Amino acid sequence: MTGALRGVVALDGPSGTGKTTVARKLADRLGASYLDTGAMYRMVTLAVLRAGVDPVDADAVAGLAEKADLAIGTSPERADIRLGGEDVASDIRGPQVTKAVSAVSSVPRVRELLVARQRRIIEGVLDAGAGIVVEGRDIGTVVAPDSPLKVYLTASADVRASRRSSQDSAAGRQSSVADARASVERRDHLDSTRATSPLRPADDAVHVDTSELSIDQVIVALSELASHRGLLAGCNAEVAR
Image (tube, rainbow, N blue to C red):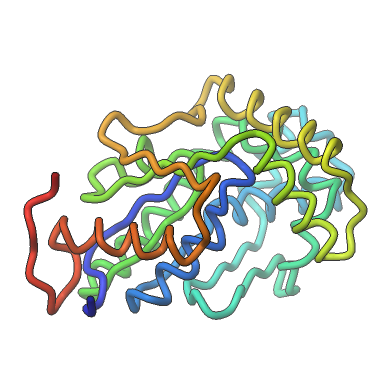
């Protein structure tokens, strides 16, 4: 199957489902742009922590978010994530940011600002006649509710904890599987119970359990879904089942 993506693939799901890796690789395979919306919330969180602002002080967090100098690229091949011109692609994945990001991302004004920015990025790609894979926790429900393909990735708690622990270890961060499981379960609870844009699948999202699937298998499955929806230029559209 060949063909470049036209339109938006909305990819949602909790931590440890392989969402970021899948989104990046899918965008690369389909010749599309890629947007990591979670990185944007992590950038604001890093700015909050560096400024010494309490992550639960909604007014202070919102004020800082309005002034923060954020820049994020859309290439699936390279993470271009800058705060005030500084490359913070590694810093935003640290444990302190991970612990505080749910509180920061639950602030309504923060979500309003970043969702508006995410939509502008998506619109720019679409206006150029191209496609984009967008990953996060509210893409299919809030950011791009009209996306022709919405996917919700899931995986068992044990698998997700193991993956997160391996990711942390590979990045030089100490993390046991037990610690990783506690972290993902805490994040799940906070994200799914927040008042603004809670984590949940869109009503028309395709659920894909990645517990027993390799990354390549997930990519093939999602590429086929995109083809079935007629989103790949140069491919014959098939009726989605």
